[in-house]
Image 1 (cartoon, rainbow, N blue to C red):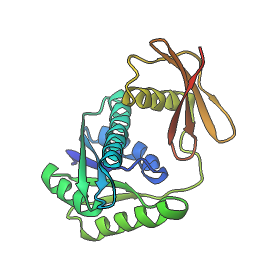
Image 2: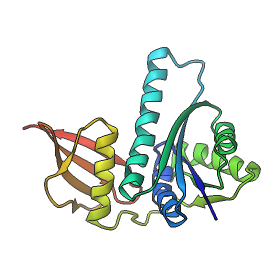
Image 3: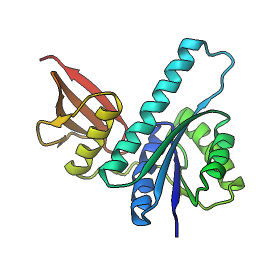
Length: 205
């Protein structure tokens, strides 16, 4: 029924929550998952800042792609520049997407305004079904296995070769902590249990 699922992401809480749904839908329909991040054009951004934004977008799509590959899903990644909703619609046409999966908005502040605006425009103008995932405060990362999967994807996306999970992931009040090692580096991956957002902390050996 669906051969191509498009998942636009900017690494925010809203898009991180939608990530799991996009991967699950692609797996359910044996579809290829296209992961897209759009770098907003900014005339006031200098060359160094523009390069950092592009590098962050590349890491963002690779994190999702690695998580999808862990689930056996075929993945294509892309980073584009431009107006986010226009770039998403253009890519959907180019990839002949059958479905678009997006977060509805961030929980607070700027995320709520920007993500909501982009999603609303895509919903109103897309030629294909758009599945929207509403952001809530309910935990989305429920078990250690999923936390480990996200940690491996995040480490791989940041260039850590052949990461090994050294201990069972454990839960704090609002986060999962995943101890890991890659080469001679000992790290912990902190994963927000609600949004799925990740942060790598390097530990002293």
